[in-house]
Image 1: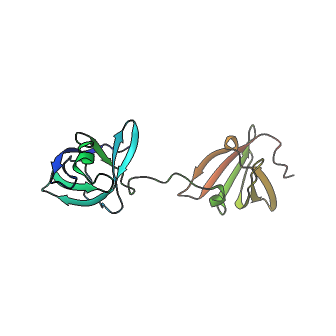
Image 2 (image 1 turned 90 degrees about the vertical axis):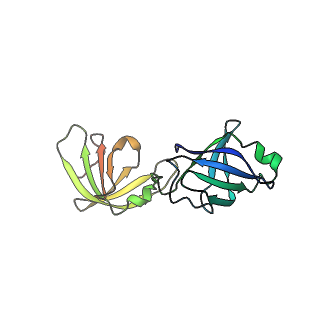
Image 3 (image 1 turned 30 degrees about the vertical axis):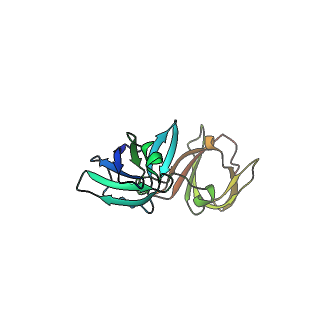
Length: 172
């Protein structure tokens, strides 16, 4: 969760406008069209989309919000701190297993010094038993796409390291 970026201080005008104090953590690249101000109301995260946002110096701004368009409604927001979740700050850690096709595969069996190198050539998506197809040593082998068999994925080097139970690979 992002740190507090400011506080809603008081009403501004009669149409639901509000005066905001901006903390030093308020992002310079704030875009009111694509980034809401996030507040917590009754333990719920609520996005406030700006109808109007105008900077007033370095540490101040005025704003009005779509769902808080009257003085009475805007009064509910006074005193709340807000955050700005900058999409550029979020790292997208999500990936799909089929994204690993083409990665170099390093396969070793537990208890053995033997390592096989190959390439992930396909992914078979099945709810019961998803499998990677790996071409290694001139053979096509199927490796369960199970978390316990994947020791490490290096996205920069495009390499996946598998550690398999002894006897799972039968390349002889």
